[in-house]
Length: 362
Image (tube, rainbow, N blue to C red):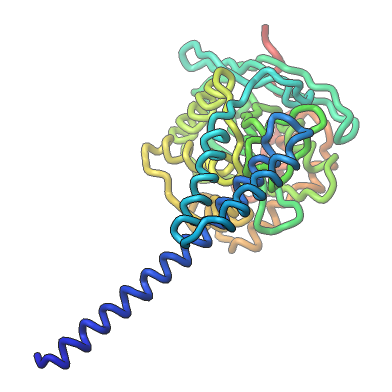
């Protein structure tokens, strides 16, 4: 190769390296801005002193911006920004959740279980009587279920507002013993309501609610406004259903002893379902963007063969899975769970007398 050719090659490499460095520096600036904004938001939302939340956030931003003004050199400014965010992150990760707070009545207790052979006894099983969405009386019961009776798994998916966000509730079918609905939710203190933005910070504890379907499902179909609930039967086998049920109870027991923070990105209803489902199958968790944007989880499950479809395409399957009208008609009937499944794909017809699910045991 001639000297001119070598020079052009070296020049091309130098230009590539230069553009790569510029891109990396620009990316570092974007990350620094985002980390600074996150740190200010963390101080605003999670400061233990409510009256100091706004001043703390503004003071942090003022100190960072003032330091950046006086510091020379782009690299040093990035170091300052990242150092400030790191200090806030160290404080933020030191915040610990507690089970001893002034909880709302519907999350006043946390479920836990013990076993005797195949018999699972679930303590603090929630069974609320609703007069309105906010006016209710909660009964905390102990119910026993035989694992040998576990037939399969159903999933309720609730949409409200955005089609990208939903709330799944897994229900375990124990045949004549009834259904155990398990809802993974935020545990709210009195006066606290859910906020999608606050869900990314240390605002809510995570809770596993073991409940009667006439409670946790009817609340959404009959009392809350603008919530649309859909019921699907899954292709989960009894063996995998058993493993999944045990995974749920193990997580509930763990949270009963050692509370965890809810996080809308990393520790929410759908991420926990995905992890437990993989563990029940002794498999790796399959990554999918629809685990985070869980309003599309029905699409994900359909594509993976996780839903009994009866040969229907997803739009038709979803249309027949809508249960709000049936739930309102059933209301507090003892055979509520049977009535909301009647005539839907994947659920065989049952001819049973109206009866309540197993009551509390001592």
